[in-house]
Amino acid sequence: MIKENILKIRERIYSACLKNNADPGRVILVAVAKNRSMSQVAQALVAGISDIGENKVQEALLKYADFSSRASQVRWHMVGHLQTNKVKEAVKIFDLIHSVDSLRLAQEIDKQAARINKVQDILIEVKTSPEESKFGLKPEEAIEVIREALKLSNISIKGLMTIAPPADSPEGSRLYFRMLRELKDKINASRLPGQELEILSMGMTDDFETAIEEGSNMVRIGRAIFGG
Ligand SMILES: *Cc1c(COP(=O)(O)O)cnc(C)c1O
Image 1 (cartoon, rainbow, N blue to C red):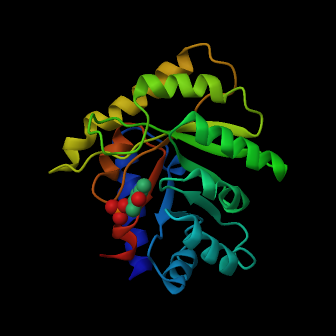
Image 2: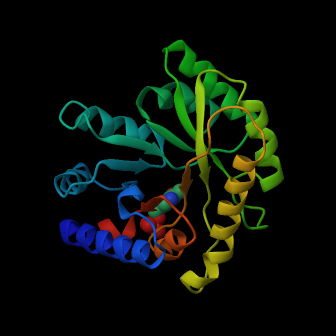
C-alpha cells in the first residue's frame, strides 16, 4: 500500500513538473513519518524514499537510532516547531531543519552545531498567511533574520519553508506558495552575502501539485503516503 502510494505521488510530481516545465529530478519528496511506526518507515525506505521528515525530536531520535546504521543514505528532516532546549539533540541527527523561525533559534543551532563540528543546514520558516497562530516569520522579518543569521558560521541557510493555511481547494494555497517563491527571488536578487537560497520547501498532501507549479522543489507528504 505504502509502495503504491509513493509510486502514485511520484507520477503526480512528474506531471506537475511537466506542466510547469520543471525538472522532476529536482523535486525532493520528503516522507513525513510523524506518528508512524518503524514498520511503516521501513516500508517507505524499501519503496525508495530517501528523505524522512519528523516533527518531534524525541520521536525522530528513536527512529534514527533504529535506521541510521542500516539506512545510512537516508536524510532526516525536522519539519515541526523546534524548541531551543531540543536543539542540542536535533543537530546530532537532522540533515535539514525546516522550521527556523527566530534569530534566537538560529543562534542556538549555530552554537550546538559548533560543539559537534557541524555546519547545520537550515531553512527559514515563513508565515505567508496573516493568520497569527501559525509559527513562522513574516516575510520582512525573515529578511532581517537571514541578514543576521548569515554571520553565523555553523549554520548554512539553504532556503525557505512555509505551511499554507487550510484551504477548501489546492487552488486556494497558490497565493501563499507564490508569495514564498517571490520572497526567495527577492532575497537572492538583493546583495546579501553567502550562497543563494535554493530550496523552497512547500506543498503537502492536499496541495503539493500547486506548490510545484509555483516553484516548490521540496514537498513534505504524510497522509498521501502513509494513509489517514
Ligand atoms: C504533518 C506535516 C506534513 C505532512 O502533512 P500531510 O498533510 O499529512 O501530507 C508536512 N509538513 C509539516 C510541517 C507537517 O507537520
